[in-house]
Length: 239
Image (cartoon, rainbow, N blue to C red; front, side):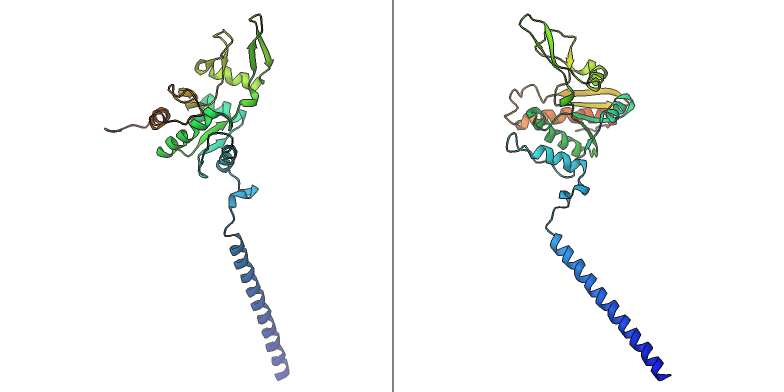
């Protein structure tokens, strides 16, 4: 009987020792992993790239070639596709930003838009890049309008939907032809455009020269007004 109990105790001691060793090894691996990754940027992992980080990367990677931007990682930009865009234009509410990273006017407008959104606690701005969808038209030597590149059907539908709020296609001498220029910020409430702003402010004539403080505030006020309209914000005295 003593031999049997001795063998059982020995087995228990061996099992306990094994579990202790396994636990120590696991703890060491966890500590090593935490230490080795403490300086790594989690946003570099493709599985954790959000729309906000994607937007930040797309715009900041052109800093050496254009106006330098610093986009926060927690920005409210949300990429949407054509179907999502049309749903918002049909009966949705929100802010739609039409633009693209290399656009110098866009690079002036984006920081101001993000600033206004932060002030109003806006956690979502819809982003749609329609650059490659657009048509390209010009006049030939006889003054006739020719199409060098046909726009996509989706682009034509967007233009038709927003026709009353778009600028005339420059250089064609035909006010009936409209174009979606960038940047263009639309403030939509229940599918209706309550405000939009193309480019930045009238006093800015060269997008390579950053907005001055006065121009920045003027543009910010335009965006704040649009936000107030679509979300029915009210101001008290001194707002």
